[in-house]
Amino acid sequence: RARSLAPEGAEGQVHVYRPAEARAHVRAQGSDVRAGDRALDAGTVLGPPQIALLAAIGRGTVRVRPRPRVVVMSTGSELVQPDEGLGTGQIYDSNSFALTAAARDAGAIAYRVGAVADDAETLRSTIEDQLVRADLMVTTGGVSVGAYDVVKEALSSVADEDEPGSGVDFRKLAMQPGKPQGFGSVGPDHTPLLALPGNPVSSYVSFELFVRPAIRTLMGLDDVHRPRTRATLTAKKALTSPKGRRQFLRGTYDDGCVSPVGGAGSHLVAALAQADALIVVPEDVESVEPGTEVEVVLLG
Image 1 (cartoon, rainbow, N blue to C red):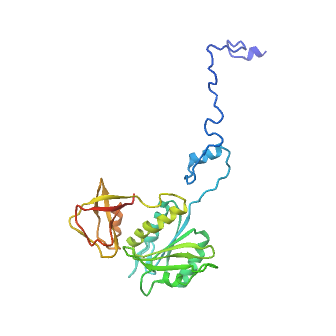
Image 2 (image 1 turned 120 degrees about the vertical axis):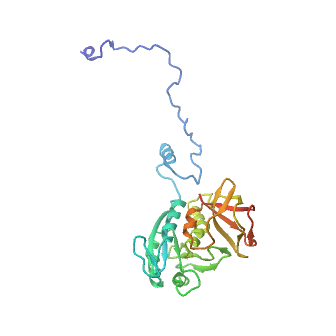
Image 3 (image 1 turned 90 degrees about the horizontal axis):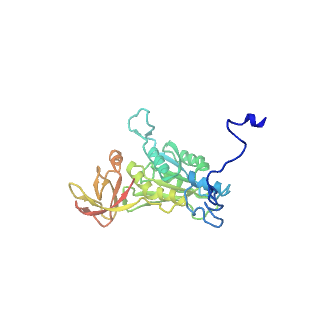
């Protein structure tokens, strides 16, 4: 009966027509990773292949540095969200969108908070509400010397619980753009906070120099800064820079040469949108002639 169910010509026997080499088609134990081998180095970013390897060696859990959660908040009663109508004395809020995108580009999980009005108590309560989901807080605006610098007012007296000498410190840095800066920590968990200036270019340059390295340090990465190189300046006229301040000018980089884009104004978002590099003019240099070799920060 069994023979009647077999395919036509089958005899119920196996015929071997060529010899099998020893260990052919046998995967040796330990040929992938041996016991005692280092499977992954500390600091490795876990992507799909790395997670597959961890599972393959039987590691159901592993200690990691999670992607930091960054809350971005812009301040200013004059700010209006895109798609809404502009009234007299109002501008669109571009900073919160730019910095949220920049935080994600740096590797963070970023949350954008709509613009907060110029009221210290409102800002303070909004920050307190956001602390539950923040590993790092970034504010923009309200840090200069003026009547409506609510970030200073809201945070200069705020300290962490049981943390001597804490709170947020406000400084004037020897740089342009981005002179006014605030930094410190707030709340019971000592959440770091960076308070950036409100001009769009100032806030973005400040993010690249201070916030991006902080995010990437929290991630445990080694390459926390943007790459830098030397390039020949190509321009129609000399670049001027204020004495005693390190200037970061927008530029476009190509094959060892860099050209300035737009002016030095901290409000020139259109020029920033065309730039892929920052031209660095040192504090002790007031003029840079075309053809001079300059330091360049590559923005990618």
